Image 1 (tube, rainbow, N blue to C red):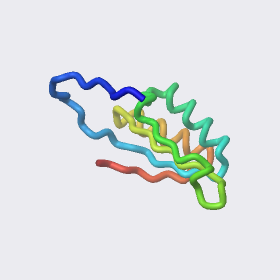
Image 2: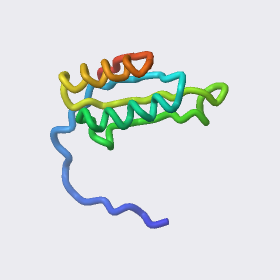
Image 3: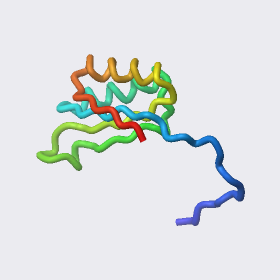
Image 4: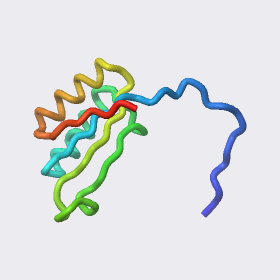
Length: 92
């Protein structure tokens, strides 16, 4: 495997994003939430997933969605609730 190339320079303006952490008892609903979050404006590189294989009893899914704005956060949170997710906000 090749070593990644690192470009010189300082990264600016990378404030931590508010996150929605949602637990879905059904992984298929978690997948639907991921697809919907992308349509609502969540960048693909700000989506984290704990798949069913890493969950106790091999069931469910945890989805972490980093939202670029408060308005998007509210919409994503509401969408996850409609899909049956247990919501937790994380602000770092």
